[in-house]
Length: 271
Image 1 (cartoon, rainbow, N blue to C red):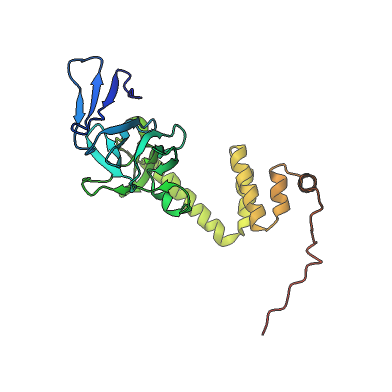
Image 2: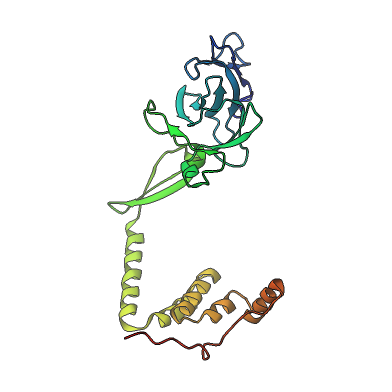
């Protein structure tokens, strides 16, 4: 099986019970394998699959009834699935991250999950949750679970950010004195408005002074929510309430049981 990340590399798994090894070869150096793993299985290896979502991970099944996920770059076993079934074929899912399809000798298929969500699934389904191996120095975080970007404020008016484009490097940004003074002035102005005029009037002022349509719409919708005027919210988004009800009734094939607020009676609370 070929490496999905390095097109010149492929893996050869040995089904010999005396030498259950996994060898990774590279066409650029065909004299000897670039990596060999002898301690993953105790008996012959039956199937092997590379993870497309995280090419560092591989899953293998052997005659020892073990199904193991390994970080092939370090040779460290990441986890082992708690199953005693002998799987003749295992394959990572191309679309569902962390899901592995495994086929037993009897032709039955099971879904193995890298993530612990299997704990909340139906116990009757063939769904297995892994056990993290104690030999691991620290838990491995696969690529599909790693945050692509993030930011956090720190002391001294500093902002720390990271992104996958910078390969995990942290960037520290410090706000200028001009930006801090502008922000402080806006906060003081907003605080004085809250003490003198109602919030709905502040929304009118902000919507009129908005510099773009998005900000103007935001304050108009906020005003409607403060007034509990949900019909006006629909109008702000260009939704006709009567037309929406008509489409729902046509889809359901029946009339909706609607009551006007004036006809609704609130039951008295017991004393």
